[in-house]
Image (cartoon, rainbow, N blue to C red; front, side):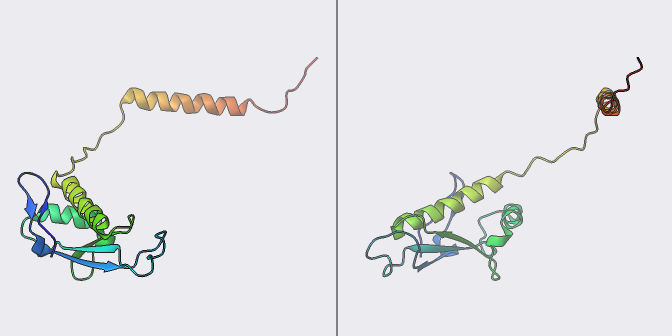
Length: 143
């Protein structure tokens, strides 16, 4: 069972909400690459976790739906390093970054429309461009 995960000074996720599995990692590694399990699968029970606000959970699910398992667990994998410990720390840091990014609700978008002068400038530019294209072509000489 992993240690507690500190998100910020007010939020700490207990280690009981995490599950870690290891697998053989691809890529370079030298002689022992095919015998050590350095790839980390870190599962975070997002549905069961009672530390995070439901709105934060909903934003996380909406943003990373492909990372959710059918059991409602959030899956983070890491295989960048040759060390199991470093991969575990990288996966834990990804979860910290994800939770921090979704703690603050997104700013609501207010619908706006272009001003009257912006509309006029746009139509004038279209008219000017159209007349430029219309005047292209063969020149008739009357001489």
